[in-house]
Length: 117
Image (cartoon, rainbow, N blue to C red; front, side, top):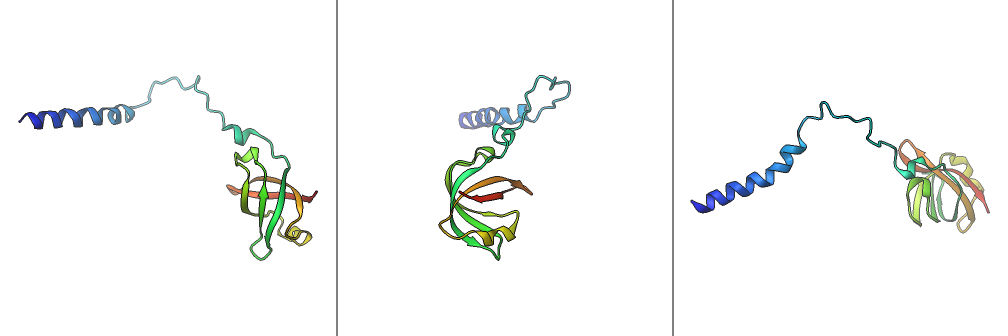
């Protein structure tokens, strides 16, 4: 019987945070709540140094070895990105040093401008 009481108390304590979290927010003053977008989304896009690793003109994508993309909150890495202007890919080849501007297009990180350095 003692084990049943301990189990019941443990379950009650475990469920308590969930019960408080599910409470109504009616009457709460939300005016003082800071609801600003994240720092990454507040920054304007600016050019990032990169190297073209691969071009897939058919898919409209370019694989880049790039530095940090601050406006998207992304660290330096190698990644394939869709390109806003697919036709511009014909102006580049693997190994080109480029300056790339990234932004979100339809929610996805996208190359919006790419220039040879």
